[in-house]
Amino acid sequence: MAEIEIDEEKISKDEPVNEAEEMMQETGEQQGDDIEDEEQQGDTEDAAAEEDSEETAEEGDAADTDAAGTSEPEGGKGKKKLFKKNKKDKKDEQIEALTDQVKRQMAEFDNFRKRTEKEKSSMYEMGARSVIEKILPVIDNFERGLDTVPEDEKDSPFAEGMRMIYKQLMTELDGMGVKPIEALGAEFDPDFHNAVMQVESEEYESGHVAQELQKGYMYRDTVVRHSMVAVVQ
Image (cartoon, rainbow, N blue to C red; front, side, top):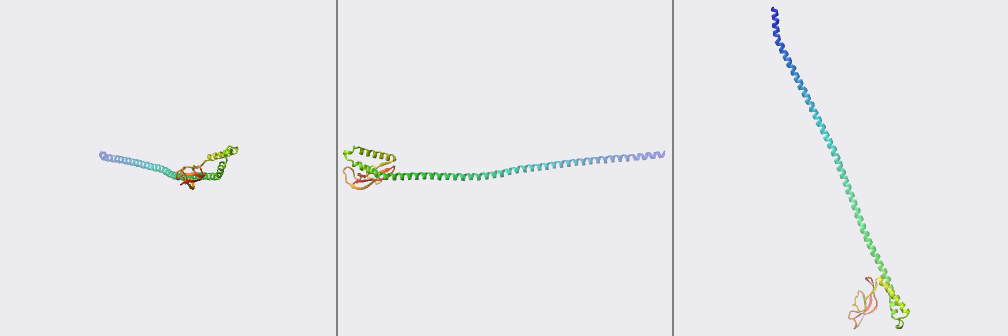
């Protein structure tokens, strides 16, 4: 009986120890589980942070790549535009230079044309004047011949034919612009008259032409031959 009691006491003494050990073991296991949970949570947070940092880095790289890709074409385009602009400016300068050269050549050609026409006209005038000067003595002889025809022969066919030829010649000269200078009775003008003598006259005033010794002629606006006249004193 005594042994049985001792065992019971031993059992009664050991039971609290076992319960305490179990409680400590459960507490330790729970703490271990909590630590594991915390470690797992920390690992999860670290993994999430790493993923966020990786995504941020990837976004930054993508942004840098986009910026680089965008800036490069713009820079290239700007250079191309600048190159094109410079090329266009050079082309415009060349066009302006060629245009100015063409204008100068056109002006020179126009001046050459005007000068040529003027020289041509001047040469024509000189040639016509030279011919007229040679014809004038023939006209003088016609007039002298007609003045010497006797009164009784003025109606003869010969005299009539001479007058017709003279008239035809003067008509042709008049059509060319050759006209006689009016001298008799006109005031003396050194630009048209050549005074060779002075006379007294009751019919004309002083300084006027009293006699026309040789008829003068004009070709258009120029004097071919001055009138040879006698002027009243």
